[in-house]
Image (cartoon, rainbow, N blue to C red; front, side, top):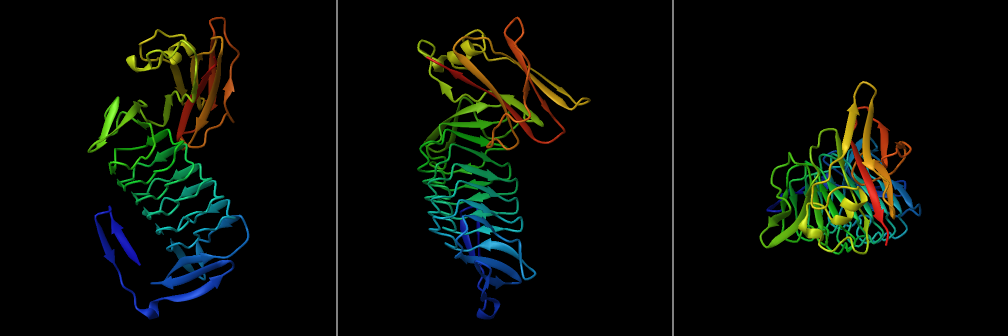
Length: 334
């Protein structure tokens, strides 16, 4: 078994042959080492794989080198909370895999662990994940990624080859990044109590810069705008001259060149969160959405009031203290 520390050193722990034993558990091949189970292979036909947390009384703590590499039939994988290490190339070229949730106990995601998972559009990393090694999620289909506060170090090319990756959300302070860690990402989002970021451009490594957006106070409820479709003729002549693109100012009926302002209210007595926004502009569609992890967005649980005489609507969601992020997605048509 080997451990790596922040990409700067490799420490090898050599085990005697007596400490390793190969065996089978259902469709899984595994070895035991120091009283723990290591998944070394899988030969099942099921496209939905649940990796066990325990095998014969031993916790599953590791996915070994290339254990699932090239398993093109796998669509979903559930990783156990007992997991500590995802080794190099563990799920490389699992081309049908669509999403993955990395549990809180995982300390590192190895080199090329998910590289070439060309259907992988969604990665959720729990608080606790600390190290992402080279090309861990390269050549996937990621659109947005949320990185936990526990993340300490991101190796080169971790997100390389994700041509659609337009947003990386940082839920804590800026981690140590290599110059090409973020791949094709065009915008980094962060909260204003985080350390290490700069706005509107963050020089996150020597010779590397990226556009940034400050999401404001993190708290337990954060509000901001996530806009995917701004394609209005005559509205985007000079989008870099203002804190917000003119198309957004138009959509929300606010003065061009000014920071956008919205009215929100958190009622802890009634356990509701309200967000009021202008929604009366012709040629604009408005979709309030919520998320608990910045990756999965949806409108389930969001109720929207009828438009008032001034063109405003109020979106309301139940709130009970859990992490909750709110988003009004606007589409400006031609």
